[in-house]
Structure formats: C-alpha cells, structure tokens
Amino acid sequence: QVTRVAKALRTSRTVALTGTPLENRLLDLWSIMDFLNPGLLGSAEEFTARYEGPRGQRGLAARISPLILRRTKDAVAPELPPRTEEILHVEMTPGQRLVYDRELLRARELLHTRGPIEMLAALTRLRQVCCDPALLPGPLPAEAGSAKLEALVEMLSELAEEGHFSLVFSQFTSMLDRIRVALDQAGLPHLTLT
Image (tube, rainbow, N blue to C red; front, side):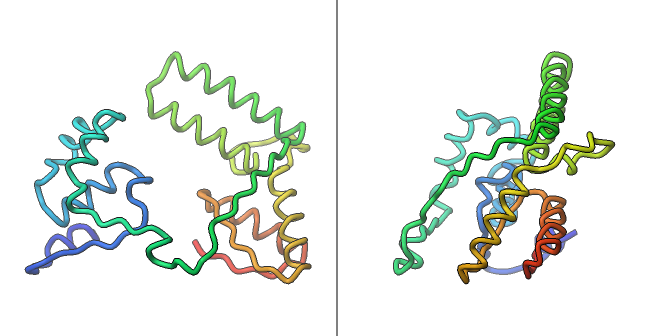
C-alpha cells in the first residue's frame, strides 16, 4: 500500500534517502529504483532473473552507480573515532549444542531434497539457535539455555556498573524480547525499539 501511494505522487523530481538497501534483499533496491525511475530496471521478475548472483550484481552496480550517492562516516562525521571491533567467542551450552546439532542434521537433509528457499530457512533456524534455542517453535530440552544471552547480560552489567550505555542490535525481534526479560531479571534498566 505504501508503495502504491508513493508511486501515485506526481512530482517534478524524486529523491530517495535510505539506509542500507544493498545489504538487505535485492528486491528492496529494485523497489526504490522503480519508484525513482519506473522501468529502468524492468519488472521485478526481469530484475530478479537478470541480477541474481554475484555476476549479475556486478552489472547492477555499474548500471545504478550514476544514480547513487553513498556517504561514509568519515564524510558525514569526521570527529567520530574509528570503530573498534572486539570479537567475543561464546561456546554454546551443552543443551544448546544438542538443539544446534539436531537442526544442522535437518538442514543437511534439506540440502539434498529441497530448494534454496528451504535451505535459507534452515540457515536462519541455525542462526536462531546460536542466539537462543527458545527462538524456535516447539519443545526444547530443559537444559537448552542460551550462552550468548548469558554472556550479553554479563557484559551489559559490567558496562552499566562502569557508567556506560549500550546499544544492542538483533535481526530477530523475538531475541530482543528474550533480552528484555533477561535484563529485567538482572535489574538493568533498558528501552527497546523495534
């Protein structure tokens, strides 16, 4: 509905400001470009057929580069310090590992019998187990637990004690729900934005 309304607007010029469409679904980029320049990239079906895969995406990048202005953090806010990354490896709990291995076996079976959509769904389920097995529907072993959630609460507690604020992202809103409950139990004040 939003797309139909936006495309019904009649203007002499259109500009789209967006976050990171190139890191999301490819069709999100098509939708934005189709709003700006209807027909430039063909129909959604033609676009998908032509530009799916790495080779097609290189051609797409060349086609749309004159129409995109990308700004880096350095250009927008040079006063900000460079990003610091710390990779924290967290071992799964034994129960979590059991659920992961079960889902991995299921994913391997799908690899031989199903198409790419089912395979992507299986990969998503594996990622969910890594966050918290409780994100999956159905019964779980009582001892499944979430090592990642435990490590997160511990880290956030330490940062709060030092007077720091934290911003936590998750692709899964259901994980944000789990985090909220864990923070409440730990007595850590928080706000959630989904």
